Amino acid sequence: MRCEVAQLFWVRSLHWRRNEKQKSGIYNHFRFGTRHPCSPRRLDPFRHRIIDDVLYDNYHHYLQCEDLPEITVVESAVAENQDIIREIEGLSEGQVTINVDASSCPGRGSIVIYYPSHAVREQIEDILDGRTFYDVPITLINQ
Image 1 (cartoon, rainbow, N blue to C red):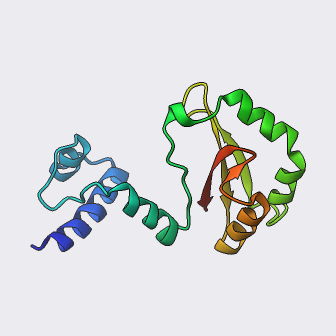
Image 2: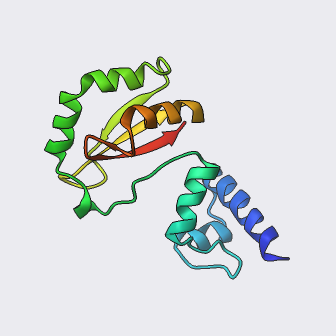
Image 3: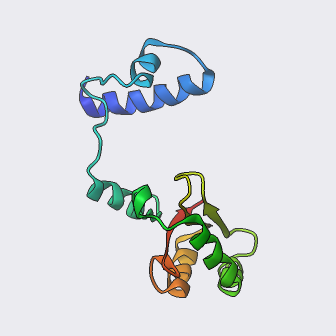
């Protein structure tokens, strides 16, 4: 079996077995981190960003925890700019959500914006004029 077919089989069977809560050999093999010769390799950061942007229509800041601002800075930026937040949420009523991510890095944070389509993402980027919210890193996730 060629690796491309094995990878497709691996992804489908892993997903199915995990959902069915079955402990098969292939599930345990990948669950505990051992590698099959045809398992997907880790992507380099450049390719990962391209896949996030082009395939999934997402943007992640990919900053390390020590590079993120303090959570108080994030919360104050959100509190001081409620008019911009309302404008972004008003782009697609009930489908755009803005959250402060304080759980990924203790004491540090960023802003996560969920949106329904690429057109709304472009509008969000136009409003923010970049990829930060008043110097707070953002993550844009297409729902």
